Image (cartoon, rainbow, N blue to C red):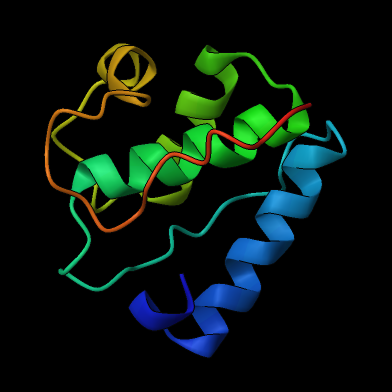
Length: 102
């Protein structure tokens, strides 16, 4: 994600991910912005990778990334994110990491 967001946004994102991993409800989330080079499927793959690594349910991960990337995912429902986050049929920059085990 380093190549697609500012350092300040990345620091913020890391804090949200830490809270998500600890099972805490993230404090009030200020959505982070990403470069327009990332498509919604990239953000879904990013979410799938962290959710899988932390052993989180897909619906929780979908809700988390919808809150964190509100602007980029504004036109996509949480249920759609949940369903499509591990799809691989389109071109993307962020790949699913099949080596992740929880």
